[in-house]
Image (tube, rainbow, N blue to C red; front, side, top):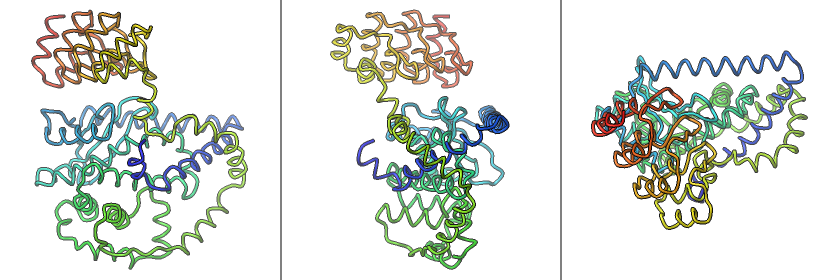
Length: 433
């Protein structure tokens, strides 16, 4: 991550992540000491994953997926932001009926691998139909930021820390501040970001009538023990604090100065120290000394998309960048055209990402196999179908790619082409049945 991107990350996010890692490790070690604890841990993990997988399957079947032909304006904005953030693949975005609830979230069926999803609740998306596309764009950018920062994958490591009073929630709130900053940075419309947050406060009709200074002052009026406790056990910061943070980050005039409740925070922090078992502290110290180096070396703190780029072999990078001279040089030096990156993508898939037919031809002529799958069951032709690149698809089909190949989700190349609605692509596939 470059220096400019690091400025977007909340100052306490990565520190809290390390604390959550230590706490999670301590909890897991404590549970694994006994057979019963290990069974409980496994059962909780399995139940959580299964319920989430069923929920996502329901959304994929009953929700409406954004495409070039389905809500094209929102699809294009999502695609542009994804590219600006450097996401390798645009997540699948679904709109679901929400019964009046205003929300959105990013997720992944398997936290460490699998497709990324963004779910938008229909009542919020309706704002776009009222000429408020910028507000919806901000919410989409916020959810894409969660994917860019790999918060979904990191949650797998820190989930047990959510059982520790205040700790997991503090990390989650820091993540929200980071994503607010990133969304403002990539949309460049801080005023619309604030309007979007006001929608969550008063709804999609009344938010336009909110007097912002009075709304923020309302936060100061209600400070106290219970309000502070509510903040400490919440995964999201209060809306007034998020709005004030956006104003500060974007250099906007301060609508109101929010007060802090330091004494209550100190009291409850001391209380949390009493409530947390002493064993967690001892195990945490041990975990920190033995695990600190491993955490730094693993790159967990880095963005998911950057990790993938760092792992790509030199020939893959040259193919993706369309650098034929470098690619040929590497091949002559002995580079394997079928070498795969850490998720199993071949150099040919990199060339398809780059969209250069000449690079695809060069690789095929030097022994690249168009039938090799990555970890998700994708072959180069699958990626070409998703990107609707007919010219490259023809080259791959001529080289022996199977249009009936199924990916890990059971989708054939035909299925993907039918979803995109590209008639030219479908016509090409029919020639190679």
